[in-house]
Image (cartoon, rainbow, N blue to C red; front, side, top):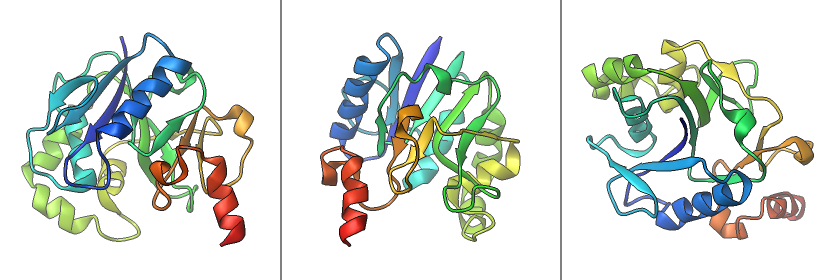
Length: 201
């Protein structure tokens, strides 16, 4: 089974319209792939309720709860735009984005792929979530991706997953990642407008 997963916690910058957009893009480029959203509110796809009140990006750790997924999983942040068939993004080995600004050092958790159980991440974090949230606040260990990197050996995606803010060969891209400002809704989900904004800034 191949599943695309995303996470929506209410009260933040994103709403169910972002899930709807991922659903539409998925149906266009990779029909037949299942979409699941871990959320505390209604979403336009299969919903798995969030169990914890972990804030912001820390909610993504619930992706690794035991028995939530089987088979191949591809996680996408809500500010990801699908631009091609995502089949090549599914991996057996845990794979994440490179840190777009430090590609030889950190990883980015905006796109992640794995197969099988990764419940050790959930188990370790849930033992002391407050401690991990306080610890992962440095450049060397930043946020959920810093926590993940300390507990798993990660491969990194290549040109198939690109930043909206960094120029690349878009013909090879399968997903475009918006990180920070602007958000996809701000530019009508058109990543090409991000480069135009930066040129005229």
